[in-house]
Amino acid sequence: MQFNFNNLEINNLHPQTEFEKKVFFFMEEWWSDAETVKVQTSGSTGIPKIFDIEKKKMISSATMTCDFLGLQEGDTALICLPVEYISGKMMVVRSVVRKLKLVIAEPSVKSLKELNTKVDFCAMTPLQVENSLDKLHLIKNLIIGGAAVSESLKKMIVENGLPQDNRIFETYGMSETLSHIGLKQIFPQAEDYFTVFDSVEISKDERGCLRIFAPNLNDEVLQTNDLVEIVNEKQFRFLGRIDHVINSGGAKIFPEQLEALVKKEIPNEAVFLGREDDTLGQKLMLVIEGAQSEDVIKKISEIQFEKSFHRPKEIIFIEKIPRTPNGKISRIELKKMI
Image (cartoon, rainbow, N blue to C red; front, side, top):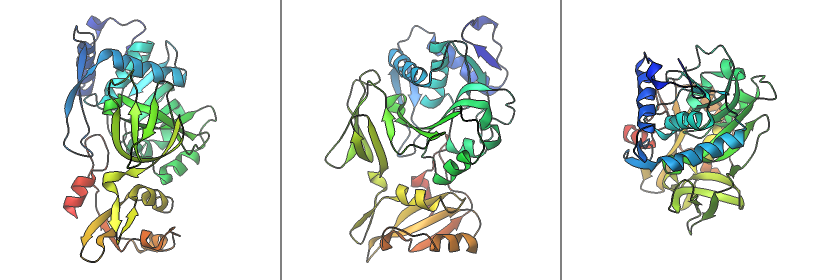
């Protein structure tokens, strides 16, 4: 199904699937007299919350993204993300604000399986991208969010033989920033840093965690638990979440950096955790998704880790790593399982 926001008569729309109905209900909420809409957080770092967001700030966010990507009235967007979360809601709002044609695809790991025509814009999770590599050539501007893009997925994207005028970006943001506040290009050029939008100011607190001031999106200064390296007033490198940091024998280990290194060598999902240990405080362990594999273990043993304590003391294989409803790895649930 497709909604054409350039010439839309809502009374003539007849959604069929459950997801089309959810998109339709959100459109009704958007066009209501209320000044806010309700948004649910993903719950990847804690208990999911529901809070109200001003529509005018969502319009500001949509405008920044559309301007950055150069989207024009009449262009085609595709939504394949749940509209319960800010990621899905913002795809609808961007289409309304820029008067795009919005194609509806059921959210799943293979949302693009029925896509046979080109679209100008789409937002997906890394897991969706990994399962849709054969369709990426149909998307002119793709943004990937909800979780970090692994090095192995970046490699698959680059080696996919995409047209050079296609653009793919990794996003940085959260529900409180109304989707992303910064983008980092993956293809056709690989960038090292996220670049934030013009109206966004960034700084660090005493812990080295990112602070965001984006008055067009949120009236408050947003304090994150994301450790970063700030390059200049508009660019930063994400190092990892401070609440994920593993303290092993007095050494602080950033699991996200080790995961990026490991995933350059193996195709499996991999997560580093700290297991309580009487001697070390926390013992570094690596959880790998998939069946036990001596080949995978051998590849990990050959990795040149920067520090000796970066090498996992224990490797565990697990059939399926738990994820939140929108596809993020749930470290909380994984720790409980382990």
